[in-house]
Length: 534
Image: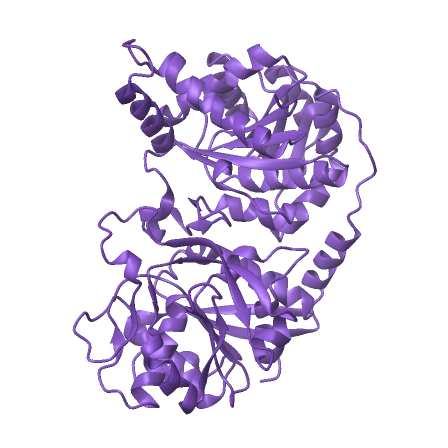
């Protein structure tokens, strides 16, 4: 049995306060002090996972190496901890209820009435502990989605109450993140929302051990004392989380506020070593002191919600720091790109990234963007559907295959250069049925991708159903678009390049998922490096 200790991060007053960033920052600091740590997300929605959710509903669907479609916060966890998560790191209400109902149908409960307590809460506690048992971790930080008081979150809050009672206060603590708003008219920081938020927690049987207060203004000692008094916590456990320019500064501020020291003291753990944050601070310094600026056109159909491309944006941030450059992302809606305005839409950029997506909406604009990058010799990176659009464009305008398309867009196309994988043709259900997770890719040495990776064997994460049709492989190769990355087991095309272009790369996988602060993705690094030449 695991001897792990558990930290729960709850939120109050309002959503989007940054529980994921605080959880990731604390995990990184504890990791730097010598502990093995992971972060887990409990999501209160009834969907089994975000895989079937529209990006406008929930932002990006993040994919783990083991093929789970998860909440985008898992991307933050990986980027801060520089280590992969798994399907165990994301739990939804849909998964919990589905599991309990399946057990009931099998007769596992021996005819008993199935209830929220104990059956649902037992399932939740089991899933919280399982992530520690599988990896033999020292500490598990569990972020609970939503805000305290939401009806959807009640079973999770009750599970936390039970775990604190069962395990004791030195093995299980609660960090509550809340808001201290500043009223401009009176010139005051107001603590009443925090008091009410903690009161709701207390009504549910939970006394928070640490309070993290989001604020736009520095907290005075009087404010800290007032919060500590009204919320039954030590003043040293009232932590300021002031707004910062970039999320990667948060761990540095949490270190100054001694969140890690306070947490270890509450858990009765010693700091095994002083944190080594020099590489992290170097990254922040480069990020805040760029020597140049590069403008990248991101062509997609969900640009109204930037969280739909969260991992891509963060990968640009990582790659920009390596190149000591500020990456200015110009969001271009693919539905607005036409033959008559493509030059106006994309003419001023140094590089073009055509983003992933599904369905026919906006596909014409993505194809035109790929054509513009190819003809104007502008560095290009196509991801998943973005790669497929580059293939379709090349087939139509270089191979002169009139009507060439993907069977996703046109089932009757005479030239299906992109086609549904054979094993996908009989699948009806949408959720969790794509090619998901990490797959191997063998890279040709004489290629731009090899110069980026500096190895011939890589593993990258996928999320798609349609593939390059290998029946056309020789035609493309003769015309100058080469398949330089191949899955060694299936022969499926993973990477295409145009060799007589400054930098034109399309990938069937999602490199953005595996880019981290301390390990920026090499394709993004090379993409930005070449864009700086324009």
